[in-house]
Image (cartoon, rainbow, N blue to C red; front, top):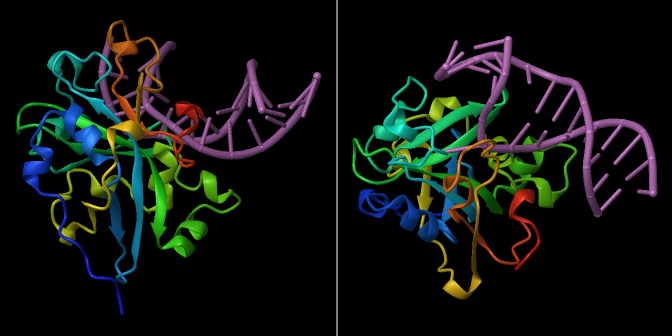
Amino acid sequence: MLPTDVSPLNVDFYNRSALIVARELLGARLVRRLPDGTRVSGKIVETEAYTGIDDLASHAGRHKRTPRNMPMWKAPGRAYVYKTYGMYWLLNVIAEPEDQPAAVLIRAIEPLEGLDVIARNRPDTKPREWTSGPARLTIALSINGSFNEADITRTESGLWIEAHENVPDTLVRTGPRIGLGKTPEPWLSMGWRWWIGGNLNVSVGSGKSG
DNA sequence: CCGAGGATTATCT
DNA sequence: GATAATCCTCGGA
C-alpha cells in the first residue's frame, strides 16, 4: 500500500516574504510523485531567497521581465524551473503576491523516500552526493522544464511540498548565496541562504561549518 | 584533500 | 559574443 499523501503546503504559506518562506521551508518535505504512484521525496535542508524587488542577484532584478523569468511574477505556490549552464535544471518556488517577483531556490534535500529511484537517477555517485546541490536534486527527483509554472499546492502536478518537521532556530545557519558571479554589493553578501547546521546533505558551497 | 578546467546551450547584449 | 542561482573529472600532494 502506498503511503498517504499529506496535504501540500498551501498558497497562504507561499504568500509571504521570500525571506520567510526560505527559512520556513527548512525541514519540509519535497515530494515528487511519479506516474506509477511512487513517491520520491526528501527533507529540505538548504534554500536561497531571491526577492526580486531590488535584488540584483535575482533574475527579476531591476524588474526586468524576460521570457525566462516570467514565472517569477506568477501566483505564490507555482514552480519556476529553468536551465543553467546549458545542462542543469534548477527548482524554485514562487513566493509573495502575484505580480511581485520573488522566489526561493531549493538547493539541497536529504533523501527520505524512493531511495532506489534516486540511486538509479544518480549512477556512479555516493549517497551523500545524490541530492546535495540544486542541480543534483532535480536529477535525483526527475524534475525538469515540464514543471515550470506547475501548481505545487496541488498533488495533481506530481510535485509539491509537505510539512514534515520543525527546525529550531538554534539549528539554522545563514550565509551569502552561491554562484552570484559579479553581482554588486550589497546583494553579493546578503545572508539570504539558509541551511540546517551539521546536516550532511547541504551543498558543497555551504561548507561544513555548523 | 584541493584547485583548475571542461561540459554545453538558452538567454541576453 | 559572453554569461550563467552547476557539476564532474582530472592532476597533484
